[in-house]
Image (cartoon, rainbow, N blue to C red; front, side, top):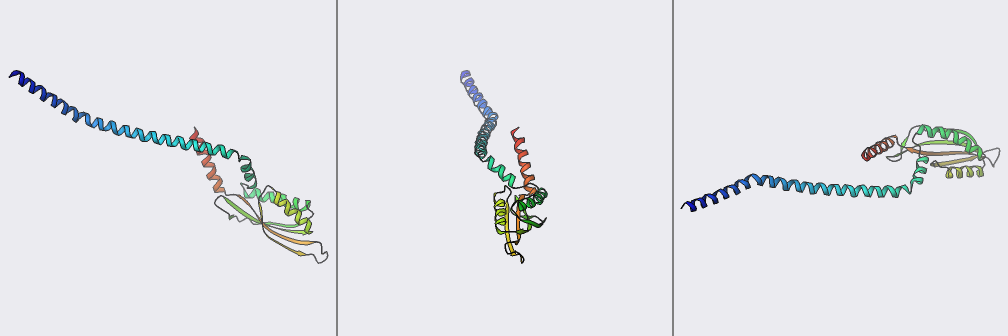
Length: 197
């Protein structure tokens, strides 16, 4: 009888130990499995971010091929309308006289117009006097200039004294980067530089 009671007590203790172990270790097992799942999700997220970074590097390499074109666009679009207006004040008399035209007036409309979110423009008008071939040469110089000019209107009338001399009025505009776009672009570059570190 003693051995059968000892046997029963041993089985009861074993069942009690297994039950206690299950009660105490089950939450730890559950916690371990949850942490393992979180680790797997984080690994997946890291892999996706690494793929995204590789894709961005690939795009950056492709864009480097167009760096010269981007520099030309940056040159064509000023970052400051005041500098652009000063350049116009210097450029227009020079280009008109080089092409045989007399610049009688140049007026710049300081109020900027939104062209898009990134680009704004301002208008200017020229009053010129000269021959048609001279005007044609000047418009060609406009076309081949690095700065972007758009001619909105061209009006002319003939001089009553000389039929080969015309009075020309050109309404045009030029573009520049929006200050808000430049600020946003500067912040993005700083953020990218900070993320590289």
